[in-house]
Picture (spheres, one colour):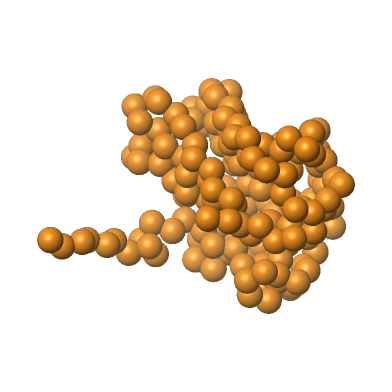
Length: 173
C-alpha cells in the first residue's frame, strides 16, 4: 500500500510571516504582496520574528489585484486558511467581528462577492469562528472563548461540494 503526497508549495497561494517591519505586506511566495493601511505595525510573533498588530480602527494589509485569491476555489476542491492570532481579552472588534482575512471583490461572481474568515466576538462569553461567502452563505461554529492576550492557532477548512458549502473549524489542533 502506498501513500501519495503532493507538494504543499504547489498549492500554496500566499504565506505572510510579518517578519520584516519595513515590508509588513511581503508574501513569502512572492505573488501577493500587500501594503499596510492605517497604523498597522509589527509586534513580537508566535512563529518567526514578527506579527501584524491591528487595533481594529481600519488597519489592514491591502493586497490589491490578487488574482490568485479570486481563483482559490475555482476547481471546487476547497481551501484552508490557518493563522496564529492573539486577541485582546476585552475587545469585541468592528461590529463584534474580528476579521482575520477578507477577500471582497464586487466584480466577481464565482463566489458571490468574495469570502472571508474571522471571529464573532459580539458576545465574548459565546464567541464563534465564522466564515462567509459574501452574499451566499455565512457559517459559524460555537467554541470555548479564546484566552485573552494568548496566542491561539486557528484553521478554517472550506469545502464546496457541488454547491453544498461547509467549513470545518480547528482551534489549537
